[in-house]
Amino acid sequence: MEITLGGECNGKAHIVGGLEQLENRRLLSTGDLDLSFGGGDGVATLSAQPGSQIDRGQFVAIDSAGRIITVGTTAANRNFGTNIDILIARFTPMGA
Figure 1 (cartoon, helix red, strand yellow):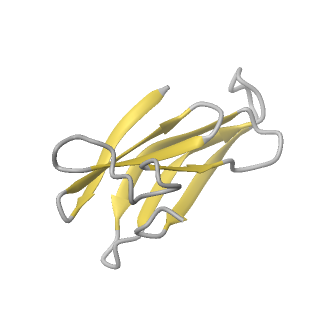
Figure 2: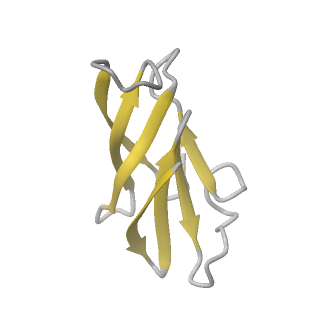
């Protein structure tokens, strides 16, 4: 899994990565996962397209409303041949 440290908002940092699905994790200033984010485990996930085998977040930013914008790639197979698409996702401040 490739991991990118990204935006910070209110003392909380976001890291993105993923392999089979995009993962966005929010960390508290202590470095622990923020359990109020995502599904209650500190992680928000996204499968970009049906049947995709790789969804990877590579950049993350926080906008002025606190929304998390993640940019990465999605591919239909693990070889990353010629079927690579750009992936842009926006999560709410709570990870939905």
